[in-house]
Image (tube, rainbow, N blue to C red; front, side, top):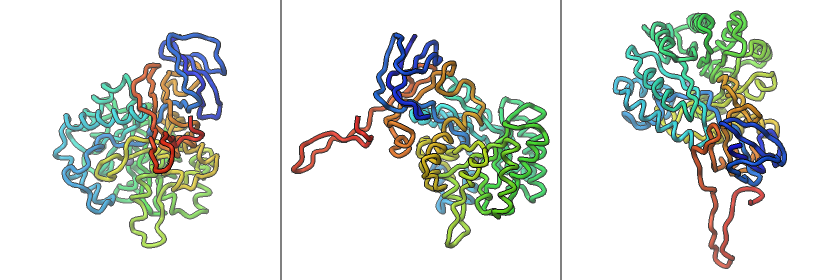
Amino acid sequence: MDLILRHANLPDGRCDVDIAIADGRIVAVAHTLDAQAAQELDVRGRLVSPPFVDAHFHMDATLSLGLPRRNQSGTLLEGIALWGELKPHLTQEALVQRALAYCDMAVAQGLLAIRSHVDVCDDRLLAVDALLDVQRRVAPYLDLQLVAFPQDGFYRSANAETNLLRALDRGVQVVGGIPHFERTMADGAASVRRLCEIAAERGLLVDMHCDESDDPLSRHIETLAAETHRLGLHGRVAGSHLTSMHSMDNYYVSKLLPLIAESGVAAIANPLINITLQGRHDSYPKRRGMTRAPELIGAGVTVAFGHDCVMDPWYSFGSADMLDVAHMAIHVAQMTSLDGIAHAYAAVTENPSKILHLDGYGIAPGCRADLVVLQAADPFEAIRLKAARLLVLRAGHVIARSAPRETQLSLPGREAGAMSLEFPPR
Ligand SMILES: [Zn+2]
């Protein structure tokens, strides 16, 4: 045995559990393991979690904040215009450096798997080559999965189909799309059909930006579910954003939800981005825009929450912290029930691991020993505090550590002392 973590709390509610690791894998999970290891760590009742997983990100744009200028209005449209201004000036070297810097941030936050869309509407495929390079370089410590994303429209942009196929030939693993951005609803539906066929022919996964709009009549998710069913792609397709569902007629949604569940299409909401970019044409009341996460979960759909953007033309904030994402989702979707909070934690850990088809994910014998020790007792406290990641392990090795947060108080008339935001303090 190489390592035993003692006295861990697990996300599923089990307390005071020992986790034994050998050759990079978890070999036992039990109360009071009667075994010895080269190294033992007492985590003293803290939450030990499988790593965070981000199901929706744009690594080709991240950390470009201010290049060539800031988004003055903070809107989606100015963001798209800004990205257009930046694209001709991108270099492969700068893309790689920014992506590697982001991966470092991610690891420090216990985020060890990311699905990133990569814009293929560039004849040079600069970003594709850059992120394939990054994927190879970070593989020892982070699983980076890439989606061929025709940002300017699969039919709307002249060479998008050719470039998307070239990107897949170079090794991009997931087929993307943006049906609501095509010229017409009919073109959008046709793009969904064609892209699903490409995925079926090549045995690939699908993840489309789908209905990222406040238009209740943007119903490409219906076509995506139907095509998934027709082509037998169950469990291999995700619809990202699905914000139009927020504005749809309730009767129509009552038909749509079982259709999505039947087809095994997963849903990925991006709460930080949806709450800031949607509802921009509204006066008051302003719609929130985020898709109907609790209703999707209730219908049996696998739901994940993605970060989408960090310091890019669309969003100036973010720090690769999936607890920040879960925290926002709970507020926007009013997922404050105990079940809702548990689902929100699953939506940034095990649910996206299923969507990405990650191998050996979880805390059970046989799983890879990828673990995060948080300065919190349970998922609720982790989300409340955006808790410090005390230790991050990959295949049983510590690859990042942070000091616990503690404040030294010296208040007039009071005894000096330390305080912790954890409950109960430990
Ligand atoms: Zn996106």
